[in-house]
Figure 1 (tube, one colour):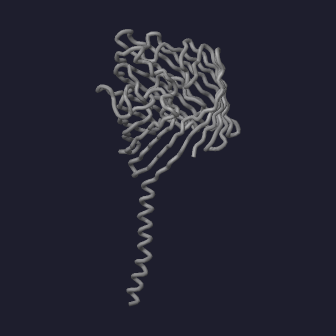
Figure 2 (cartoon, rainbow, N blue to C red; figure 1 turned 180 degrees about the vertical axis):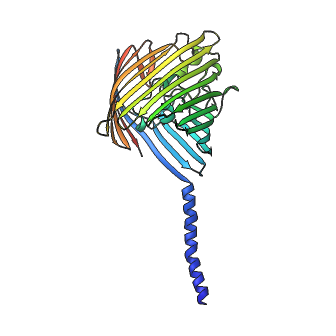
Figure 3 (cartoon, one colour; figure 1 turned 30 degrees about the vertical axis):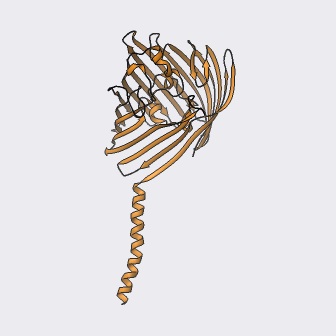
Length: 366
């Protein structure tokens, strides 16, 4: 009788321990993190014929990262962002939705909607402005860079002493939406990078797409209306090639980034347009929280370009980033923008000839 009671007592102790161990193992194998990012801005624009002053809400970003198993992970990013086509001038958008399978050491397969790994900026930063070194993206992101694709990606990271990495991507192109694609053609991207020193990354990439009827879907520039009128400029097919080079150095003190883009946009009627974009950024950290910085943006598309249209933009700015904590910062900049053509430079900003811009941005993450 005593032995029976002793055995039952031991079982009553072991069962909760076993249950807790199994539950803990399941919890360790599946870890989900949900974050929210957003920003608020004040803008003052001085233009030749008018001045604008306003407060605005920026992109509000819902970010999910989940470790499903040891080999499988999920990343999701949905944004509520400005959209002039809606009544409220805001609309939800699925920016990334991807499953990653680590099949061998540092080699992976990624499927879903993703940022095209064309350059350092697009591969590293998501839509949370909290992590941007500056207030805005480079100008090329509004005109030349295909920001997203939905497809398959082969990836390798931190291989060998030089920390070599590669990305090979095939997916829907510039003319596609998130659920369909015109024609049979797919975009193709190959990208390689090395990290030979601490805080340093060099990256080169090549992108090709065959744009059916010169139409743009949802995978091209975010900030401008430049892609809404291509079909009026030219309704034929466009052969789109893009070469990109990035050099990045972000240490505890000094920050530097160069993004260079060379684009060939070919049509049957006007031949091949040769377009170029250069972005340079430099910042220096003071007392751990203050980062004064300077950046220069240059974008020029050829007179025979039928996808973006003839365009020349230059933007020089000085700014300051104050990192209050890892969850909130304030950025301020003063910029001078010049253009060789009258174009729409940003949402609600018709930049003619020479313009000046003052911005204050509060960025946060929860």
